[in-house]
Length: 185
Image (tube, rainbow, N blue to C red):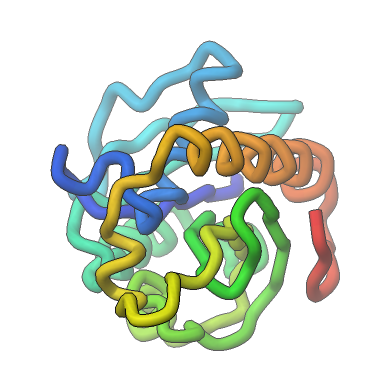
């Protein structure tokens, strides 16, 4: 069994913000496959299914970003998920808009969702798909920038990053046991 986490903030206020790239990517991935999260578990929207012959669960922690680790830990512990079978999709300001990168392990890089997950699990060795949202313009705080809504052009660029992420998710994460350290996708 594998667990895929999309990070974001709950509520309409944050729906189309850069910080919700993980939520948006997860929703888009499921929608393209005729699936949707319709139930809840671990204080969060949750779906368990089979894809490509692999048992896989999807979760969108329904707490604010800095508390995401709690529901992720509950899911990991309850489902017996090994750290190598956990994948977290999240926004990353250090990657260009429209790009996506895969990484195993590492620090949180200032991302409060990752910081919470690492603190709760006591392990940073999980897989990540980092979705590029680019750096804020000069004079704009990163915390304000990631909570701004994306424009239509930015949404189109994010859709391109999502496709790269989906390709990796299906062809590598769900298909192969050992993924290695890092790669552009």
